[in-house]
Amino acid sequence: MTAPATPTANVTDPARVRLETISSGIARACADARRSPADITLIAVSKTQAADSIMPLIEAGHRVFGENRVQETASKWPPLRELVPDLELHLVGQLQSNKAEEAVRLFDVIHSLDRPSLLHALARAMDKVGRHLPCFIQVNLAGEEQKGGCAPAELPALLDAARLANVPVIGLMTVPPVDREPAPWFALLAKIADDHGLAGLSMGMSDDYPTAVRIGATHIRVGTALFGQRN
Image (cartoon, rainbow, N blue to C red):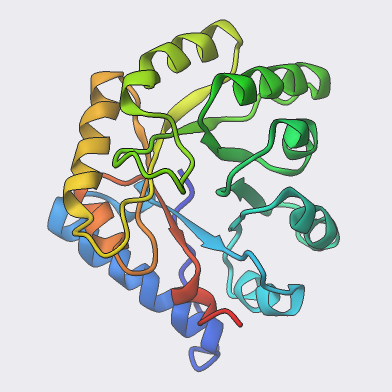
């Protein structure tokens, strides 16, 4: 896992202060759960953020970022990756099957595998490009129509199909319902993952990441708390 960066200088810089605040929150939650912060990957969700808003976090030492859209990533990140080759990009938004090959070329981890058609598109793209990216299967625990994710009942078949297609699945991802206590949803995802022998849990965002870490999150997706409110 990639541990959160720890700022070491210029502590008055807003990006460093925000990064330090999140890193400290992760450390406290890990202490409560008797976990190591090194086991948590902090994904800075930079969707809609311009490169000049992202660079301060990179300069503060952070290297793991998340984006929602393939097109935005293609226009924004290649120049940044030329400057800083060790950046790691996670696709945390929904993915159309016809964008699978471009996603495989751009990203290092995919968090939104949720249906057989996308699985087959990713399998073809990974074979063609020669990059078999680690994936999370997104699970729609509450059955919300407006959200992506497979139903829990569909998960076993999708996992079996992924193994046959040689698509690496390292864990599960979820977004709990808005304005509802997230802990039960995080606990349910953790149980389902454990039932299927999956160690990765992509869950928790700006408002609820300490709860997610205490319950077992391995990857948290934080945007607003690192970049401020979006325009």
